[in-house]
Length: 201
Ligand code: MN
Image (cartoon, rainbow, N blue to C red; front, side, top):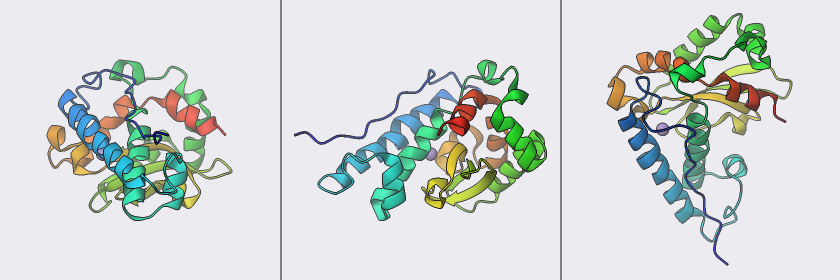
C-alpha cells in the first residue's frame, strides 16, 4: 500500500493577489519553496513511523524534534496562507457583528488595542517564530508568542489568526522592517475565515 503523503495546500487566491501587502515573489518563495520544503521533509521523516498518515494537528501535539518542526511549520503555514484575501475583498461588511470581533472587544478593549498588542508581541518575539490569536475552551481570546514552529495547540488553545515572523515571510518585500510588515498584514486578513475558525467546534 502506498503511504498517505502530506501535500501542499492550494492557495485560495492567485500568487499576485495580495499585492502590494505581500508580493508575488514572496508568495513564490514562501509558499512555493519554504512550505513545499516542509512538506517534502515531513514525508521523508514520517515514513515507517507511527506518524505516517496522522493528521497534522495530532502530530503537532504528540511529536518532538524534526517531525514536530516540519509538521508544525506545515500546519502554521496552512493556517497563515488561508487567512488572507486580496485587499479589496478583505474588508468585511458587518465586521462588528462577528462573534470573534465581539470577543476581541470584550477581551482586549477594542480592535485597535488588540492589533497594537499583537504587533508588539510580533516585533518583540526574538528570532524566528509566530504570533497567534488563539481561543481557550470557553472562547476567551489570548495572544501567544511561539518560537520556531510553535502552535498554540500544544497549550490546549485553538489557533485562529497568525503572523509569521520568520524573516523569509517579509525580507523580500520589507527587508528588516518586521513592524511595517505586521502592520500591513491587517489589510489582507479575511475576518470571515477567522470567524469560521472561532465558531467551529
Ligand atoms: Mn514562513
